[in-house]
Image (cartoon, rainbow, N blue to C red; front, side, top):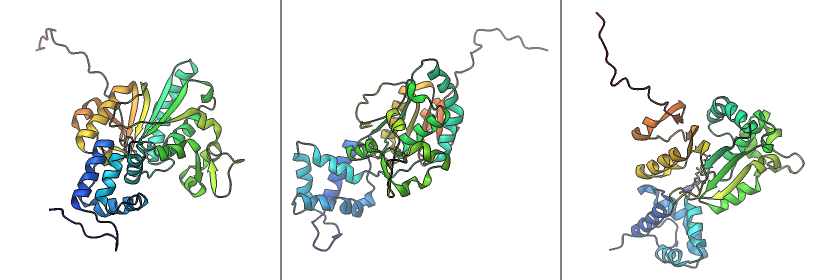
Length: 300
Ligand SMILES: C[S@@+](CC[C@H](N)C(=O)[O-])C[C@H]1O[C@@H](n2cnc3c(N)ncnc32)[C@H](O)[C@@H]1O
């Protein structure tokens, strides 16, 4: 028998426990995201407008419509509705300090000598993380644009990627940008009272692309820094493990991985990627050479 959940809206479309389970399975398979058992009201409120837009009488019909849509547009709308895209410029600022102080100096040297330098903001949402990185780089290395220094921003959600590429943000979102970066990041000429545009120099360093972290990754590593923050927190442990081990595989030998402050690497990967700051990691130094085979003569 179908368990009917409490109606979340008077006269709203019917939403059963089976509908919730079907949506939870869908988003877990498509994006690796886990919906909390208690998340029914949230799912209902985020999807009800799509149920109505498609003229479906209930959620069961809506799910069938999503699965039958060959264009993929409805799948995308569902993913967009259920992913959390909250982000901000210079979120978790200690990470940018570690990046600037411990990683950048050697990389600037490498770039100046003609070397390749790559950064990845995985699960970049509307681009604030990638542009914050670009700002830090340009503040330390104003000529970065003339060298082989690139930032890749990826996300599963095409809509946030479009906004990231556009690089136009409500003025109040710049509140968290440290004062010295404001002029560096935003174009005074294009800005209106309500919005601010990212300067062309930063945009030129960053590429935004679709990439689903639970599908094969068409990326060209190695990356000197990977920021994947506040993405894995919505995934179960085996999926998180796949992400961390994937990042480990494309991290440059002296590269750093930055994860969200509520996320953990787990014991296995934690053996190989060691903390170098709060939720910042680099490869464990190679083991000291073993002395096996040497004859140790105890001293009297
Ligand atoms: C909360 S935002 C984090 C943004 C930024 N990293 C930060 O910390 O401010 C999480 C982002 O991860 C993306 N995401 C969720 N599942 C994903 C997946 N399977 N592959 C790629 N991106 C995913 C979401 O679309 C969303 O934009």
